[in-house]
Amino acid sequence: MNDVSQAGSVTRDAVGIIDVVLEGGPVDLPADLRSRRVARAEEKIKVLHYGGYEHFERGAFPEAVGLPVVFRWTGRTRIAE
Image (tube, rainbow, N blue to C red):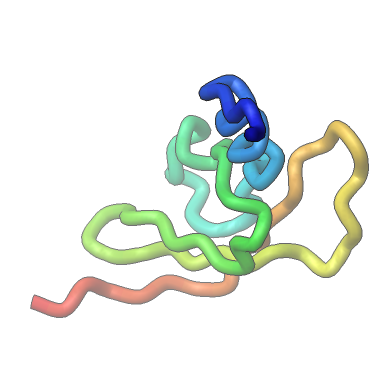
């Protein structure tokens, strides 16, 4: 029987999480929204901002060890009313 502790599951979950930085987009997008942690598999991120969504996509550069992954701004959509 395998011993599965809670600490082990936390470690497994944390392996799939990466730090990212959002680059570009509106200059008034708050700094605290530009740094986040997301699942490693994420290719796109959208951020609610002033009645719309700012869209960011993962950059084409390979991940550097210890540095956040850069997601670049690709556009904005408005929320339909």
